[in-house]
Image (cartoon, rainbow, N blue to C red):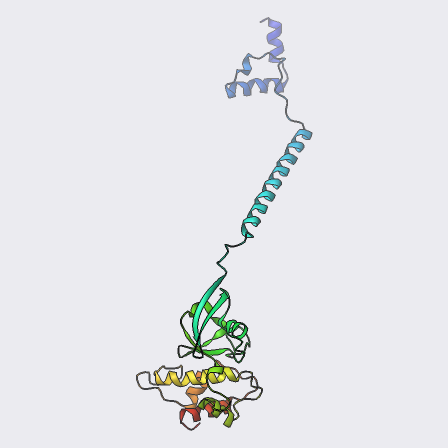
Length: 252
């Protein structure tokens, strides 16, 4: 290399010297390049924008396809034969076999399938007691239980308690003491009252039972507590207590 070339290299622009420095630091073969060789071209802003747009379009398409596939799986129809069930049970002394939707409540089965409309639908949330029936001797809210849960059970509704010519003693007591006004809650009140007396016979305590070791005794306080799940919007509570007390053989 001539002296003139060495002088030119020593006085080269800064960017040329920095290029040589980084080439050595990277350990590349850039030192072997001539001064006239250029670095690879960088992408232009337009090319970068096009690449970014393609990436966004591809991502959006992927998400859309995945979402459609997920919806298709979620909305696929269930297997046939899994929506209904046959349920055999005894209602008011008669054996019944019902083919019901698995989601059908006992209340809807009684009213819509068996047309036993004496059992009333009030709140449909288990808060009013209008739908009270007795299953195997115990009172339940028919709106809170599924029909398929009662295979082989014995269900008693208001229709199974007596006839117009021969009322059940609890029905007769309600009539005597005027334990109703509009009558909408009365079927549930009567079913609950009859089951209440059975709870005393089984010595089941309530929240107001004082001595849990002794036989539960029927008192007006016990009656009010045990009937608190049955709402009478007409306010016939005092007459209802009197009717239950008479049927139980005590003085209200």
